[in-house]
Image: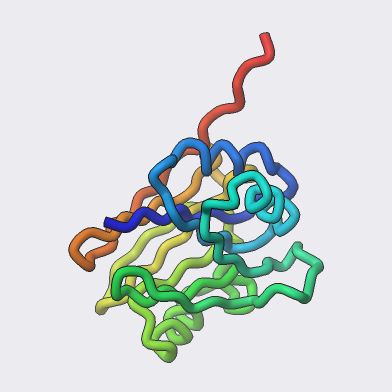
Length: 165
């Protein structure tokens, strides 16, 4: 069994991203889909045992990180990006096409700040939502559990910050 954390769009809220990591102690890998590179760098410093895969988003000004990634987990090929380069706020057609061109089984994207899941013609499409600035509802992240070569996708709420009172 493989347990992957998927997070996106922290936009300066390092604390929310850290709460996500600490809520899933069995996770060995985290895929960060952009818009909060400084936050994910801090998580890497705090959790060096976690393997982190990341891409930059449209609000990340570093050009040193790639805009797209491709990684295999338990015989499942994941294509991941922020999504702004594929106009995901309007259509997912370009993103799906790019994933299929790369031979991906799974495509992950952020940018919309809204959770999304779809399985069509052998392609899993997943957006974890935003860990800090959701468009609707509460902040969310994604969890992917791969068992017997089959990925299972979950949207989870970001744990609340502890009360100071």
